[in-house]
Image (tube, rainbow, N blue to C red):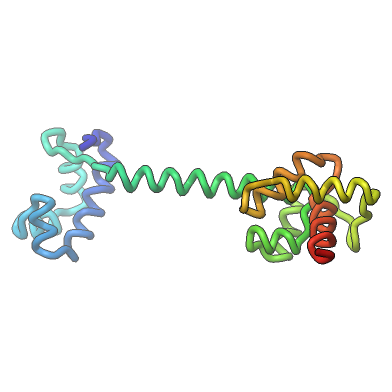
Length: 180
């Protein structure tokens, strides 16, 4: 358990615990180490008395964390952060609203809003395609990317063709896939 020393934090926690324990089952109260009588007295304290109680250093107030749940939460946060970074990368590098919807489940209006916020200009209509030899090279690289995740595949493909917007790569891939 990590002891907490800041009086304001302790006061907020005491308020929260008092409210939370008012709804607790008897076995939960036993697990926390608070009896019904103590809980009743805690609930009857005025705000001033509760503040005095929070300021007492003899009362240990602390927190404990579930290490496994914390680790899972940290992994989730990292995955969300990575997905958001990839999302911004795709928007900055000219991904179509159709691709953004397919890969990130982002609506067209939101993609357009992000583009405006990032100052990304993308002409409307069909994108001009590179020469056929370049398109074949694009498709060969696409087929050589082993990762099954479409987001990763498009990212890696764009890394090989940084001079082209992602929308161009998307059209080339779609055209080749339709032909096969």
